[in-house]
Length: 323
Ligand code: ADP
Ligand code: F6P
Image 1 (cartoon, rainbow, N blue to C red):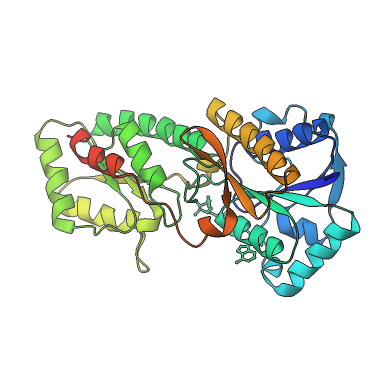
Image 2 (image 1 turned 180 degrees about the horizontal axis):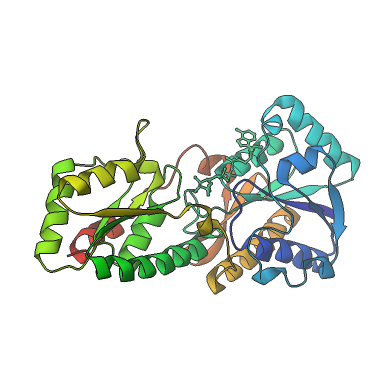
């Protein structure tokens, strides 16, 4: 394979740049010309492509966001959009593509593979909701951002003996809420798919303050919201019913930004090199993943259409450690 291309798509994640950089430099070392596609599938269909040399990725390993930029594209979901993308790739003589993104982007990669184009996917999403890998790019940095915010909120919450709701991202997955809740010492963690028992919340809030806790921090996943009300609105109401003051912080996109942690730089780098190896050895229609700290290649189709389960061990730990 002499000409390969790389794109970043969907929600950006810190460490995407480390991955792009590795695809470029490792790809060049393997004898390929490497092309960068701007703005994900939207840029691909718009022919927004240029060759990248080693200098084009200089300094990027420490930057958040993505130097290739990202996008979401409805047009690419259509057969016409995908044919357009294929035409552009073939026009450039590109023989293989690395797609760095979340489960939506990887579903797009699978669509190209099914049309006969060699593709390798790299899991990148702060949500950590992709099967076939223990960690996706960006998760560790996002967790550290949440912890930083939690530590600060605890200071002010303790000063006023308040209950706080910290709402974190994750779409329908509760990984960020659960892990940050454990690592940051939350009094309660709320993840999607669990029934939020009003009486239990009220009892827990009251009993925590009676036991001498200076604050009550709930780490709530955005995906635990109901169609009518956000999880933050719901929990605020319950805390008020418990007779306590409630404040809330929706962390939002701050979780997606910032310089990647060492873990995410190394993960992005390892994934980038593994993706090039996978393309070069003809293992396409695949996703690279991290399993038990080893690089693996898994069938793309097998990881899509569902989410991994939350760790039973972590779920068991969360409750007793909150006391
Ligand atoms: P993420 O990759 O972070 O999960 P999205 O779900 O928004 O983000 O997906 C990113 C892009 O991937 C979409 O805008 C679309 O262009 C492409 N994509 C998502 N789902 C599909 C699909 N079923 N078929 C083809 N392309 C898709
Ligand atoms: O999938 C990553 C993610 O950051 C989710 O956690 C969040 O719900 C969503 O993307 C936000 O997407 P947008 O970029 O459209 O605001």
